[in-house]
Image 1 (cartoon, helix red, strand yellow):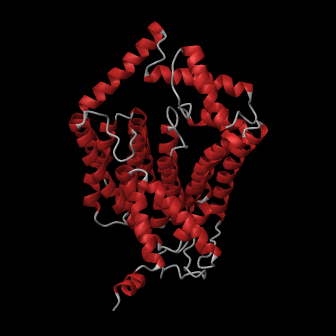
Image 2: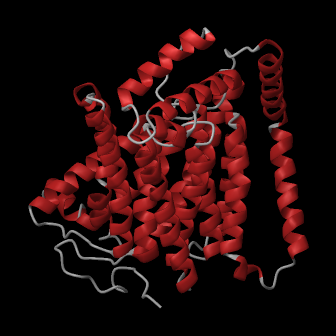
Image 3: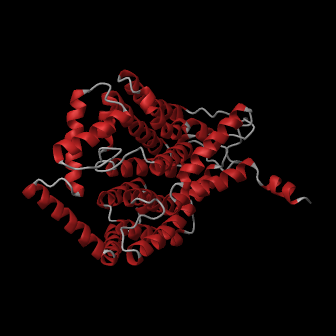
Length: 430
């Protein structure tokens, strides 16, 4: 048989989705921007398939609610540019919004994959990503002498997406979906150690909080297990990770104390902490000047660069104010910040509804994925970037698309007819 014919028969829509899903869950910590390339390319291809009527536009109420919130945020940014007469200057800066606009399109294509199949891919690919993240972190920290940044090229971004991988493994191990839970335990430890090597302090905070939420969601599985025993195991693992990463933890703590002393004693805004304080002051002032519609994207960046130079004598060109909601307030005003907040509120609401109504392990796993993403992004975004980075944007969409589908979506056939739920690996609604 012709090898091309064999390949074509093998690459069915469902099989392509499997390979695509593996890339999306494995690549963020290890291969960085590949997740952005894959997600956006897959979304554009999905548009073509929908136009050719080879895919069905899958409409679920939770997906529509989340789409409305995402599109409202994009619209707020457009409106801010129009009001400020900066539309031409901002056009190129709108390109990253394509990732968000592809949300319902990617959802429709991803929902041809059986739910159980997709859940297991997310778990196992995340486990592989955790091992890969640790390997890169060790090389970068011990051989190159830098903070671990994995394949992301940025320690904070690397830590954020690795935290998602760790929590996916934890949720998978507790859900019972993946029977090889013994593989997931060392994967979680590896991912946690990689996060320590990144030196990203806010993710050090986000990881235990997200972990506690995952444990609470799956608390029924601990009914016959001693809480004290679990606490001992948790503390032991934390001590091992802390001992291995003690040098990193002490160094990052010393940096924070040093930056704080320099800021208080000398008003030094050239440090990491000082620069953040300066940007927050500039951002609050800029928001008060244009509270409803904001300044627009390009004007906000120009304003920040100029004010850093004029007020603090710091020459820096930055794209955000190191607080996700403050950035939205300056760029798109209250309308933009509320729209951005609505994305996370709607996502969390959808997840909470599923957890309240469903006992199905796959659906609860999908809801847990959403909660983990919301918690991790919101905490990381307090002192860093919330959205606006290609890897973070694509990874957020991966978790919101797949999590929403697993939690409350309907599996459909590639040709557009509804597929039998059990035949497609989905779980029946309670």
